[in-house]
Length: 464
Ligand code: UD1
Ligand code: CA
Image 1 (cartoon, protein in one colour):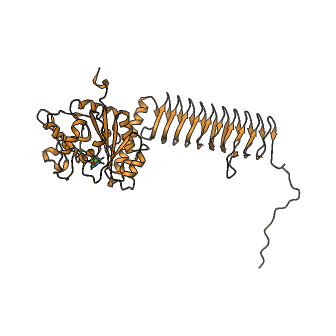
Image 2 (tube, helix red, strand yellow; image 1 turned 60 degrees about the vertical axis):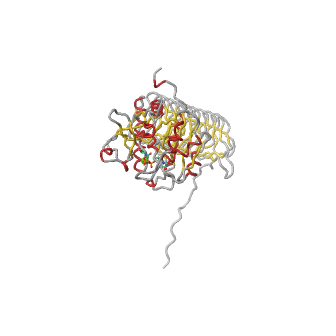
Image 3 (spheres, helix red, strand yellow; image 1 turned 90 degrees about the horizontal axis):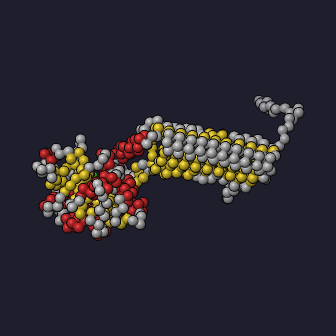
């Protein structure tokens, strides 16, 4: 069995999230700021969960109750750290919550994009000792440096503020992410001192304690640098967002999706694409979106929890939420499909048409300026421009039913509850308040007349 496929040892995860995040200049605690539509700490927790640990403990402090309320879940334990005396002190608060699992993995709530594969490598690297996730940086300023002996073995970590000029020249840094032997942790943390430049209890000092006891110290490395970048400011948050979106875009391209510009797509959730999908610039995907084979998404469309079936086309500037677009349907430009909309095969919904909680059957068309709400529209129905389903009487909502092959003339109001029979025609301008029988023309407007000898009013002459 290869190392990468051997079972992962049982784990505890500790997520440090007590820091304040002053440089965000925000009332929202730092770890709740969104990246790809999800709180920073929620990324970390989801990744932690994917490792199926025996416990997850979140160390919270500043704005702690808000953080807890936002992230609360039955699988999380919470440890309050107040005051915040350093990363070693933070992990010590979590110790009472740890299970006997042999390895305890320490993650940061503000390092959102750490990947599960990297953590698995780190945990496996820990083996009979501990492992530090390290990376070489062109500019290591601000980070703890990894100090090694002549044989290349890690001896300790020195923080920037405590480092000598020679140590500052080391470009291998501590990402902060560690895999530690649970059994030794309590003892090591209890022996930390705060006799250093920052007067803090440094978690990193456990490395020297391990070395002194002959516990082996290993290192592992992330696949990409962005995995270990932290967020301390809005600038860093925006940069990390672009790194992540770039990564997701590359993954789509590699899977065969055509992106007009990989730098102009935003995925804030899960996007699954079939073969030969094409996505134009400015598209935003939220929640769970499925684009089946040969779907074409035009520029500046926003899709949230949507399935678009094979061959359907969304023209520019469409907004879709909680709906299903049938195969080979054509939507937009400028269409809005609200929750509960289901478009059948080859349906057309055109510009400035709003559809809500309605089924529009196969081959039916609403091509211009319409509101279709709470309606069941059959197949091959034509809905004329300016048609409105009056579904709301100010208190309650009612359904409109339009059966197959009906033709709804322009500027028609259907006052629900009302039914249009199969093959019926409604004359333009009709206000339908009673059911329209199948196969017949129903018109409600007054008959057109021309008034003889009618004279346009003229302006009264001004008196002086
Ligand atoms: C820490 C590491 C440093 C590493 C760097 C990577 C230590 C002593 N130093 O430094 O080696 O290169 O991270 O970014 O560990 N936190 C708490 N409680 C505290 C202090 C911190 O929960 O009392 C949390 C913060 O919210 C943050 C994380 O721990 O998520 C790291 O804290 P931070 O102050 O950013 O550590 P650094 O000084 O950057
Ligand atoms: Ca930091």
